[in-house]
Length: 144
Image (cartoon, rainbow, N blue to C red):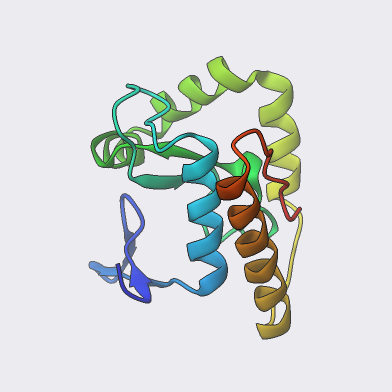
């Protein structure tokens, strides 16, 4: 995928599906989520290719939080994007109400980013990914 990607369900603006810029911090974060989940769809347990955000990437306060993303296969990423109530039910079942409430509060906070912060996030997840790749029992630490 290039520097721009369409989120599952797309961002509609004037009837057009707009792409969201994907930077190095997004790439390394996605790699870490998929590595943590052993490249397995957390719903159907088939091979998983997509890093699916619980709260969309526009929510900067949780965009790069490991507790805000899971690995899904392409089919379930698109299906849950079209069925948000089912996605919420599934997430509540696996994580519990408490986790979802904490994530909701975190998502409602504000984080302003800049180039230096995004580089710091990218460096963090690149380091975490390489450590996890080198040591099978390593637990990836979230940036926030």
